Length: 395
Image (cartoon, rainbow, N blue to C red):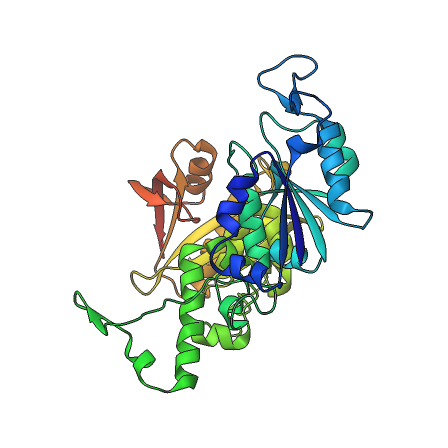
């Protein structure tokens, strides 16, 4: 693996990558990382590599020519994959690190100032990569992160492949919790299974905890991850728990078809990963709402943990189908199904403060207003003032 980094601050790159595992890997010849100072390639006698943007605006832009000359020197006539570290790029993740690892030679270009002349990007850059939705003063920190993530997977850099293959993100889930001596610390003890010596049970425990940690901390990752039957059993989910026990529901104008695992792409297209997460949780019933042969939205009855016979109802409609009365029709049908087929005693719904249309739909469906509460949204990252409605069987 060979990586060339084009930067205005090579000492910054070298101070991070010339130490620890990556530094040792370079000494052993397992990886080659070179830093080139872009100022060395300018034709300006003052070492200038930037200039004012045409059309005006704040800051300075990096010029094409010094960047192009530095890139040509790094290539030396060979084919390379050129990456610009840019806040406009796709977010870097473990899958992208694996893709870069498959290339023999990559060049990381560190932007600076207010950015890079667009002509250099259009003609010389293969892809742009970002560390996330934030802005740094330059691309050096991002380049170091990418180089480290890629190089640590080169065979021989870590003592064992297990050193990265079982870590967070590599296989689509987060890593299981780990413990070291002492066995007891401030009243907290190491889980007994890890002291049992039973390697089969230890592996099961680690897999279960990895899945649970992912579900808790990164529900978006968990929703996108394809659980095996063994994974479902570890989580207490029947392999048939993807709403297969739900029945199709026919109304006067709508058809509610039970969602299956193969519906995942359609579900994500309509309203994102939070509905995929609901599909993967035991006790939930998910339907795709269809009207005139088109997918109009989704509906769900989600088993609540508080007490038996209680569930939450959700209805989502695509923008083009709203205002048609379909939401009320779907909600009434799902409530009826819950009482008649699932023997539920109470069904609850809620909407975010200010959503008058949702309030009207729930009242029309016969649900009573219970009051306001503060609750976390499905992604676990935000909380909202919500209005709660409910309906009892027989009402």
